[in-house]
Length: 219
Image (cartoon, rainbow, N blue to C red; front, side, top):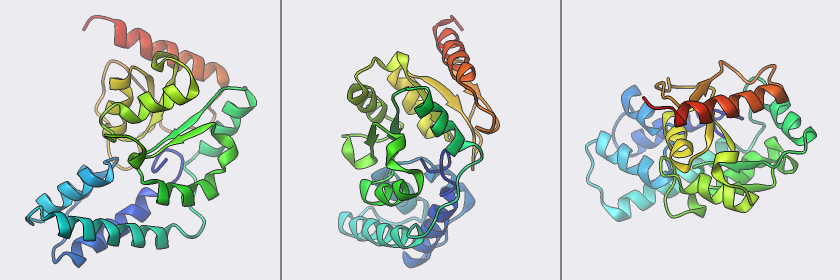
């Protein structure tokens, strides 16, 4: 969702940098880049470690609550789309394909984003707090495939971050990567496009085939 469909990573950036100040530190670009795509518990661990703070459970819980409130404020208005994303969702729907939104964002925040995205584009949604372990664990994608009633290998995941790409690969999905804020290292199963602009149904089928063939080939 963040960075793949919506250009909302910039809003998270504001929230995370303000949280660092709230905690008495400063968010470096290195810490911020490590946070992209991370689930909330992991993001807080990275933040506290990066700022040299003790992982006090009460302090981390308070920081998480503060960040959620701030991000909800930031996302209360319209959120810009990533290039080609809205047309890509419409393409999938017009083709009669099932789809699921798979995000590490907590459901309370994701529901706000769905006001921009449109719930009708998705058969199911899986959020970071809906599964035991968020991305880069495969749990969110495995849960999405289960809800859709299909094997993971028949799914094409669209991701923008290293964290999300690892999760989808570990789940056994084919993976299309459209990088946003940070580069995604190449891997055999990852197929790259600069944007979702001009995406067609034959493109989706070809990307799915190429990703699975590459992941099955010896390296």
